[in-house]
Image (cartoon, rainbow, N blue to C red):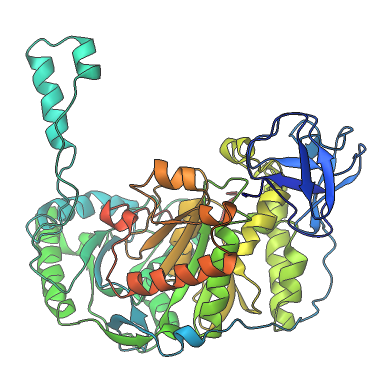
Length: 550
């Protein structure tokens, strides 16, 4: 019989509804029982005992809110009767020991990746074309139009046929009703056309709105992020377009590249428009350099590599009330498995660690990392408050509707992505991962800004959990989309890769799901499986300007 209610931690004073519950329903949990006062929607929270105004709300064993009004036993928690609260007293870490999971099933496993001269291994093989400044975005787009389809990297125009059918209706005098309701013929599934360079997965043309204006630190940070992409193991080389007079100078980019890869040897072509002159000359040189680089990139083929060469970025977006009890702890177990195998994982989204900071402090191997984490979190929170906001304003309307009514509830579930392994390093954006194990990276909670940052720091696979559905991807790294519930998996099967609703339904344990996800990661890293975001060409890239972004 399917479980209808869940008590996550022994100290919790609330339960999570796993299914819709009517008022007057007697629900049993861990030897106790309570009768629902209100209808309770799945994913929302039920008070175990009466909670008075001002009392603490405990979930995941930590403080996640304070009652604003009396909540009877069996009553539902809402934004009207609960407000955000989190533990703000951060103490020196305990450096707790870690019980590693059994990884014998993967001890001899490898993946097939692209080996780079610096010892890193890519899960894909891309060529980059990037601008130093937004003034060059048009030239990037001109190059994209000129090169993408002739080289076989253009996506089939899935919806063009359908659009033509509708336009024909309009031209023939069709009515509004015909345009709205006429059944359309199906078109081909999206996919790459025949490639000139079979060993190169694609050319990625990045655009952005930075590089000049704003403050100098923004441009310097942008150079660091671009350097992270150029030196990334999934990138074979890059063509860089510079105007010449912008804050983000090519010399800064080159210094950032050397910082990340002292023996950098990939083909890199930096073109300066104010030096070259005419746009036509600039574009022609860029085409020549790019094609020369692609010839070199095509010489690389996939070869076996140990799983320790995988770096996983952990991300959640469009979260729901099941995120913290299905998908997030599942990839947390995947993280622990990979760390035990010598790989690296990145836990980011600092606004979504609110209330669980002490747990992460206690897991820091080095005291200086614990101190840096505290400093970064406090500075971030202070800047948000100075801007008239705060971490308590992090949950989106979709989060709240689906049971994440305070930032601390959302954060406690989001932190489960990091598993239980020790924290080996704390990084500030856009620093690079250099140590195997669990790394903390300061980023916003914004899905694309955070995913962009994790890849810039070295993630060559991203695990992205979602309860509401989001198509987010990345230009150079496969983003695996994991549903927290089966309804979402079935409803949005075109953009979701894996389902962990099986945990909610009692068909699978967290550990079984986490092991299944690792097996899938190995297939993705080997190029055996194309994830939905890659198939759809979902190339989201948004640099963080270090302003207040929750």
